[in-house]
Length: 162
Image 1 (tube, rainbow, N blue to C red):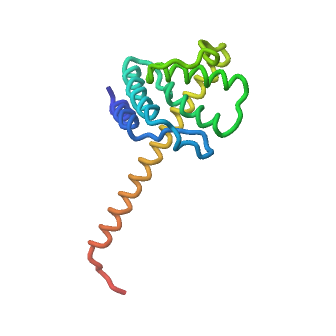
Image 2 (image 1 turned 60 degrees about the horizontal axis):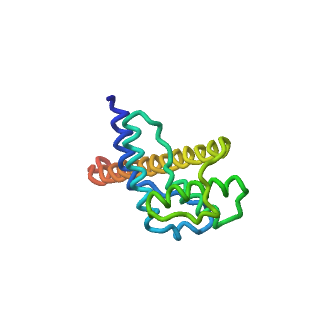
């Protein structure tokens, strides 16, 4: 393994616990159930394990469910996104809560174009949360450098007072 790969792997593992949970803008993010937040963490860990075996990193089912949950509370969605939400919510809910979605709204499968939209959403979620992590890391490094420079300047004796 080369150094950038090791650093990316470490960053991804740290991201499991520190990356934000992306929600649709509109103020509903604080209504996410606690079990869904925990499911996101567990699914991110599982995704990291899959990536070690060569699978491409993406957002998880639970992350897509959380995003679509808040989107549906913020604004009406069209039929396709409604089907996608019911499909992913059914998968996540049954996986983590051990309950069934009511039969009359269960969506067992998606059309190819709907599945492509779901996969595109999961890829976007992963890209966005890693971008946020990298920007936060850069800001922290910049702040440390500034603090070190300020400390050095304060400690350095003034050779000339003009």
